[in-house]
Length: 168
Image (cartoon, rainbow, N blue to C red; front, side, top):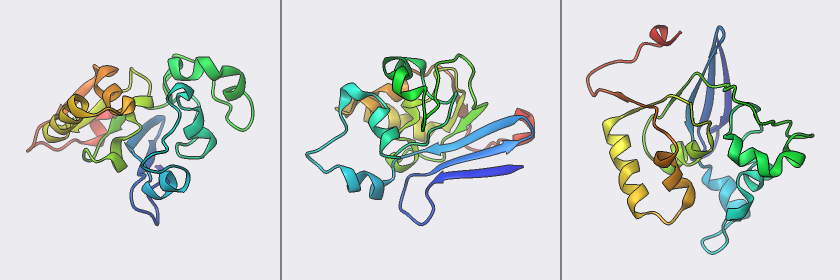
């Protein structure tokens, strides 16, 4: 087993944790780092909506990982993203076998909408309910995209435990 942590260490928020078990890769949370975000943006200065994920990658707010992000976000910037330092290409292959959301706070799920659409997403009913309400009330495109693009939600019942061995 190998664990790669791309955020959430010595900071509040920004949890992004890969767990590799054999040939399977699991992603736990894909959230916003409040400290990193405040370094570049403020209440009145936000990421450019028409730049998709390129600003987030350039500023290091999300990790540069190939086969992780939706093709429709990569294609408009393929000339930039296919080269160094990003090396991200459009492909149908998905590096993530399953995504697990621990809970529905922005520092844990803000960037889930960037993941490939065929990513199985595991979450509990409360997290899904919170995300649904945020989707209904938010003006933030990313928050609305979380439910819009994903039909592969896997509900984890309250009293059940998910065993990793079942997914391998």
